[in-house]
Image (cartoon, rainbow, N blue to C red; front, side, top):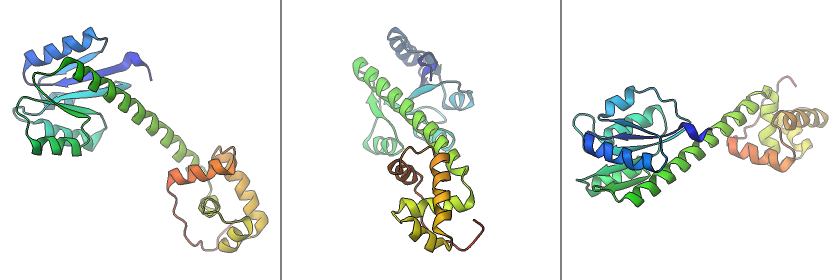
Length: 212
C-alpha cells in the first residue's frame, strides 16, 4: 500500500470549515478530498490505499450519523466526527458505530492531526488484516472436502489414530491428509497449523463416511 495514495476525506456543509481543515491537513503533508454533502461522498469512486473520513455531525439532508451507517453497509473507513452542537446521545451513537473520535468545533489542531494519524494507522492495519484473512481463506478453500474434515480434528488435539476413528478411515490415510493440509495451508509447524485453524474458527463435527 503506497503512502502516496493515503487520503483524508472531509465532509462538511460549511465550505469555510472544510477549506480550513483541508489547508491544515495539506500543510502537514496529507492529501485531502473535500465534499460539502454526504451524498457526494457516497457517489465518489474511491481509489485510495489508506484513508479516513472527517465527518460533520449536523448537515442538511443526509446527516453524519446516517452517512456513517450507509458507509458501514458498503465499506470500511475510520470516521472522525466534528460538531459545533454535539450531545451525549449522538456521541454514543457515533462511537458505537465505530467512530475513531468525536471532536467539537472549533477544532484543536493538534488533537485533529493526532486523530487523523491514528485513524490512518487503523485503516492501514484493517486493510492488511483483510488481505491476510483473504489469503488464509483461499488456502483453506484449496483443501479437499475430506481434508476440511481432518483439519479441525487435528487442531482439536486428536492423534492421527483418533481422527481416523472419528472419520472411519485408516491412520495412514489421516497421515497423508495431514501432510497435504500442512502444505496447502503453508504451515511450517503443527503449532502454526493450529493457530491458522483458530483464525478460521473451524467447528468440529462428527464426520460421516465418505471418499478418502
